[in-house]
Image (cartoon, rainbow, N blue to C red):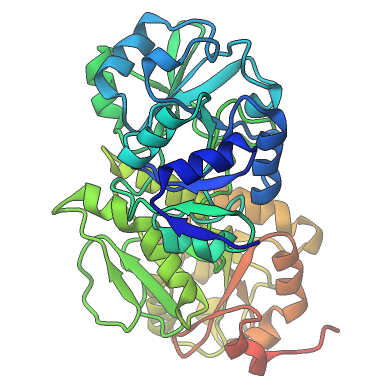
Length: 449
């Protein structure tokens, strides 16, 4: 299939009337759009994105007047927000009207609706007699596109047209709110900050921003989402300047690096948000193995950035061995990689030749530098212990008897953890961070025994 990149709204409208799926710009991110009232067209969107059918879509309308049949009623709080923030990056979860197919809402009784502010998409909505179902124009779980080039990289040859609206102004998805049992709920922080909405409403928003074991009640609620193809580790105070990393920071850092991306939040948080996905997609193309991202303060628009990066971050575990390290050198490694907890895997946690790594002295020394310690020699209890520690601590390191990660934990263990969805990072005695099974670590490979 040939994919046309164009600003021709009439051509886009013609394709939509024929049941096609096209890419459209909004002020937030680019979307894969189809006739929201035609079930077959909506199913094509799910197929293209490889999106679970349990994840509902957002219906895009021209404005308040276009909601007849789409929603069953408009509560006062919703009307107030529409009048102030539409068109704009605000999605409202409202009782579903009879015109909306079950495919759009994943069978749920409410439908997510918003009026996008982008002029090309407003013109397109005026040119067609139906609303548009339009999730982000990326494969499910990936980084959302904010330029036509991003969409091209994802779907060239799979869709007939990309409506070229240039770079997205907000660069991060819409805020989603709704009502449950008389309480207003924030389902997804987004381009309109929580504080702005609370001021407009005159009341606080409760939070229900992700699901784990139950189906989502609003779009964009899966815990793992917005993730680049490389492992991303979010939450660093100061990311280490690893040569194999792409590094994203929001505050200045005391080093230079060939793949350092600076998105200053102190000057303009909106600019940082607008560039976030563009930066992550640039990191995907760099000759690096993983991405390290500095923590952002989760207030104002920072709440949305924090939410996206937290979901994009792959569950990860570090490995570290002590060998003959002096305590000061070992502690420096723990500080460099901001290790918050040590899980000791040694069957006999004492060291005849390096006494300060015996369990008692080690646990005391770690306590003095505010690092948690736990001993788990039973392989059958390893995974639940790791999961417990990760609920409490951002960076957990597995401690073994040797400095060589090949000898201290065996690659077979790391392979097992990788198969369970973890990214494994080996802290080498030289102070380097190697992603398990990345090309640079192949020299350390050991056949599983």
